[in-house]
Length: 192
Image (cartoon, rainbow, N blue to C red; front, top):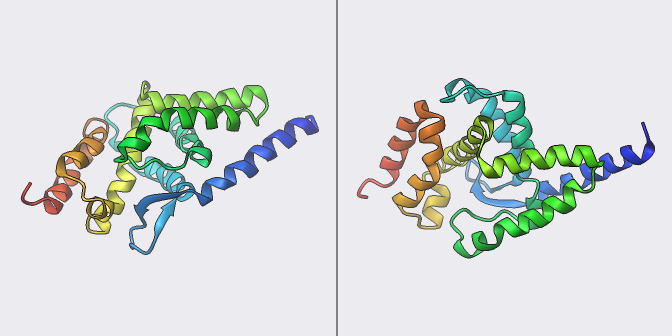
């Protein structure tokens, strides 16, 4: 194994450590602070492992975990764009693509290409694994908002319709969870 390859891999891992400094808007379930994106990614991996049995279609869990662990790496440069930030979402795809080019380019070519494909699959939602990963990416912040009595829903004055639209992947990909999601949304938006 060449020392250049190892140096490239280590440089990528050092760069990936920066994900710990990217703050998200979502609060921890105890409401004490915002989570960082590395914490979010770890929790998504655990969530996928725990909820796999509820998937509407069979998934390769190993592939799901690989997708989830790389899907937010682009936030190192692009930042975490809040789902309800209309202006930020207009430039999100281009910012994330530039980071993907840079970040995956740090790795040996074939490894960088492999991780890039996983990131692209998440973005495209075209495979069962990507759709499951996408739904799991909705479950985890849902739980945080539920446990903080509306958390970011309340702070950013979101509407019931906005929250329902954001949670919709859970309805189709993890249908057994949908009644719980609806109960929580109904409790938070009782007069909507």
